[in-house]
Length: 282
Image (cartoon, rainbow, N blue to C red; front, side):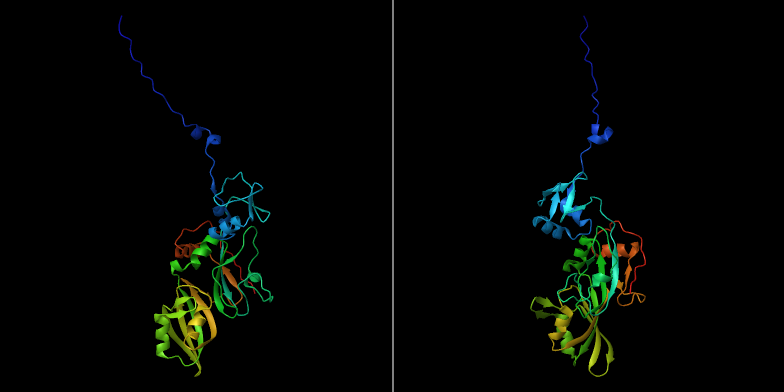
C-alpha cells in the first residue's frame, strides 16, 4: 500500500475590514484638536476649557485625554460643535487710534472686533494686540493654532513700527536699545533702528523692528532712555505690509496665496481656506 500523500492546503486570510466598511476601526481624534479646528482657540486654551468643565461629550463633562468620533456629540457651554473642521479665514485690519483689542471693556470703548464680519460657528482671534492709541497692521484669524504660533516668540517673526519720538535722541540711546535694556519683564531690544523724517526740532521719526510682542514694549524701550513716544504705528508683520487701499478702520481678507505664506511663517501647513472676498468696511 503506497504511503499516504501529504496534502498541502493554502489558507487564504481575508481582510474582513477591507471588504466590509462597517468593520473598519472607527477613527477618533483628541477632543482639544477637534475644538481647535473650529477656531475656538488654541489646543492649550481648549484644554483649559475642558479642565474648567465647559465641554461635554454625549452629555457628560469631558476630561483631558478624551478622544471623540463622528458619532459623539460635543457641546461647549451648552452649544453643539460639529466634528468637521471649518474652513479657516484671515483678515488684515488697519487699526485706527481709539480702539481696544478686547471684546469686553468696562469703559465701553470702541472695539476692533465690532468692525469685523460676523461668523457662524467660529470666532475671530487677534494675532497679538495693539495699544488703545497705537495704530496700524493687525491680523485676525479663525484658526486658534495659527494665531498661537504667530504670537509665539520662538518663531521670531519681525514686527516693524513707525515711531514718532519727542526729545533729543542721542547715538548712545540708539546703541542701548539695540544691545538690550533690562525692563521689568526682562531684557528687551530692537533688532533694527532706522532714522525716518523729522517734524521740526522736537519730533523725530524712526522705524524699529522687534522679534516679539510684549505689552507696550516699543514705548517702554524708548521711555527707558528718557524719551517719549508721541505716535506709534505698526507697519509690518513678517512679510505683510498694510496695502495702500486698506485705510484706517478697514480690513481685507487674505487670499489663498497670502494665507499660505502666513502658515509658512508659523512653521506649518495651510489648512483648508476660503476664497478671498472683499471685506472692507468703514
